[in-house]
Image (cartoon, rainbow, N blue to C red):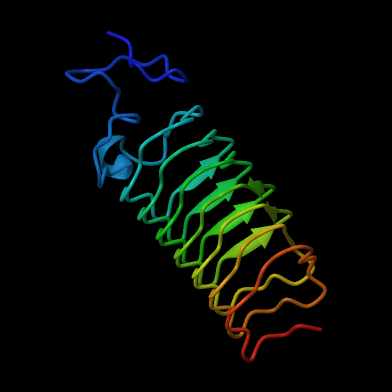
Length: 178
């Protein structure tokens, strides 16, 4: 029987939804699918608490997906659609975002230490209470976003486009704001 998620054409086993859309926490796609052969269209996927660390994810659609509490440390994301995704409390330490528009993404309370944005921008996103220490955001765009109480200590924000973003209560100590 087909998965009942509207964006999916995969078969479900015993439940109404396939592996990607079933609301099961702590999935391990690396183990369950032997490496980084993730399907391209994972719109609406439920990957809360999943271990995606160290993967290279290219061209996938993760729009509207739940990646809260997921481990994406040292993951390389290239041209991935994360619009409206929930990455709250996710571990994105040393993750690389390349050629991406991160629009309406919930990064609240996420660990973004050492995260790298390459030809990418963040728009209308929630980074409240996120940890962005030692992040190089120089000449990057973080626009219309909430960074209240975020930890940006030692972050490089030189010549960054921060239009209409809210930094109320954020820690900007030892950062470069030139």
